Amino acid sequence: MEDYNKILLTIEYDGSGFAGWQRQANFRTIQGEVEKAVSRAVGRETTIWGASRTDAGVNATGQRAHFYNYSTIPAEKFPFVLNTMLPPDVRIRAAREIPEGIHARFSCRGKIYTYRIFNNRHASAMRRHFTTHIPVPADENKMREAARRFLGTHDYAAFQAAGGTAKTTIRSIYGLDVTRQGDDITLVVRGNAFLYNMVRIMAGTLIAIGQDRLSPDCIDEALETGNRLVLGVTAPPQGLELTRIFYDLPGEEPPGDMR
Image 1 (tube, rainbow, N blue to C red):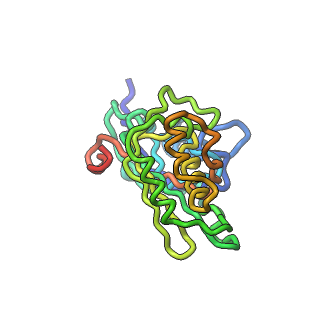
Image 2: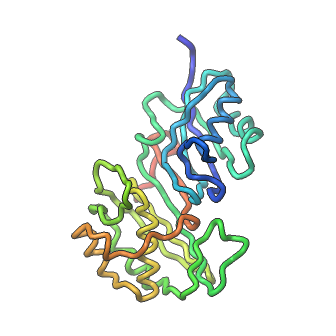
Image 3: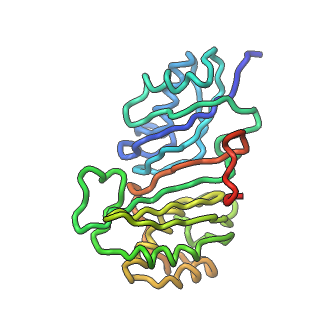
């Protein structure tokens, strides 16, 4: 039997030029680009398993993925090797060896997502790939107050878009911070796991509340009834960033307020 070790990558990408994370025939994807680079580096066809299947247009600074390494390349050298082979809109930020029992997707203990809004009458040319443009003023204080209703463990069935395949819709949200600096409104969401489009539906709902188009009570109603129709629209993908993923590994454990 060949010797191998298991490598966990931390991946950053600008999602605007991709059809999402997951490998697809005839479409450019992040998984596809990283698999090509890894396969070339180790000299054999290699599959990578990602932690989160981000949609087209969604960005990441902390996506994680693992693969089986049959080469002699040390784990810490993979960022240097792979970044010479990857396109400029994908970068490996870190790599480490992990035990056999850790899986990038199924061993995840928590995630942090960031949603960025540019709240100005006119859109930004420079940041169009990394923020969602909202031309109508939104009150961040109303958004912040409403965000508290998400905290805790709830059934988030109303916050899952069609196509979600989760076995359970129960999720725990540990924090949802809303801050504003000038025209920039930033949402930072910390939770144990997230449903398909959950953060974007949360963001779209908070935006509508900040613009007085919805009452904060819609959040409670949706959590109690599972009725998607009382919530705001699904916010665009460009504002969403997968920021960090945690595992039960030394230096990777979730902070105290996420346990």
